[in-house]
Image (cartoon, rainbow, N blue to C red; front, side, top):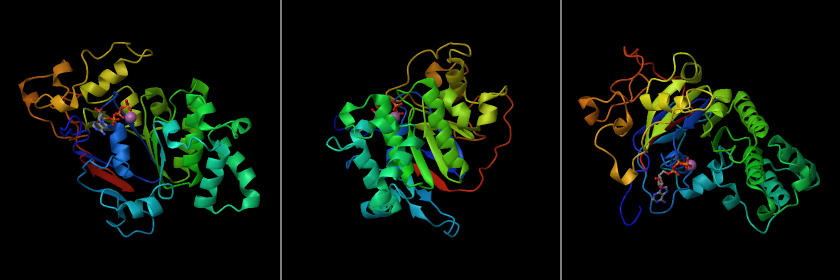
Amino acid sequence: MRGGRHIAAVTDVSFDLAAGECLALVGESGCGKSVLASALLGLLPGNARTAGTALLTGPDDAPGTGIDLLAADERTLARRVRGRRAGLIPQSPAAHLTPVRTVRAHLEETLRELTGTRRAALREAAVAAAGRASYPAGLLDHHPHELSGGQAQRAATALALVGDAPLLLADEPTTGLDRDLVERTVDELRRHADEGRALLLITHDLAAAERVADRVAVMYAGRVVEVADADRFFGTEGPRHPYARGLLAALPERDFTPIPGMPPELGALPEGCAFAPRCARRTDTCRTVPALTGGAACHHPWPAVPQCASSPGTTAAEETARA
Ligand SMILES: Nc1ncnc2c1ncn2[C@@H]1O[C@H](COP(=O)(O)OP(=O)(O)OP(=O)(O)O)[C@@H](O)[C@H]1O
Ligand code: NI
């Protein structure tokens, strides 16, 4: 709700994410990436509404069973999901840290709670946990206000990794980091996935996504407009959706050509395809909303001859949300 009006921040999103896999979620600022992550962990403001299902399943769950994250009550989310079965690296880490407590105190408490580490072992465990996110041991006794943006980011990443949750939602985990730290951080997250966990990496950083993602989901104006294998997406074939192609072409190391125009206001979406006003390929058919078929929600996807739709594989967390 904004100004008393309802805004559809996320609409008709559907994807799956398997254990051992990294899905990068990309798209311009304001397209709904963080709202989607918050919806999955029950962290939206009280006046927000969601619909649909987001099934979180573990190896011991029978097919089709698990925890529906959108239907679960706060008690279930707090006790069984957040930190334990689904970790979050929040987009604004400083806001999630308690101002009066040091990073060491945060880490030790989380270690005690999630891993049952004994008091005598906590000190060493906190240093090890910090190291996983390249957080300097010398800064463990700092309070949140004493940290730079990048340091707070690494503290939040260290905290999110403590529980070794089977699903990790990382919302812009590399903001404010230098290139080498970006690479170290995403490589650590990739390792997390390689050990059999699922990783949703929300990022503006397409180079980071290319480095670690197995698949890429592109959001535009609250909808997922393309889901693609990372190899194809970043390779010679390229994305199928004109918006996704525009995102890549805008990169300095590629064409350095920005997409003309601006994303629409969510409260004033154009009718039909929301990208049409900025799209060189638009025609009259774009007045209707294209369904996501063959991996792209577009009436004129690349290549011009559409390929067969492929269906996704096993499901660890499945998401269909309207917020
Ligand atoms: N509590 C709220 N009330 C009204 N609108 C909201 C609320 N929270 C988010 N929005 C709107 O929802 C849209 C999606 O926001 P979101 O934070 O998910 O974008 P994002 O893709 O994560 O952007 P960024 O890349 O900048 O983090 C934005 O237009 C935002 O203004
Ligand atoms: Ni965001």
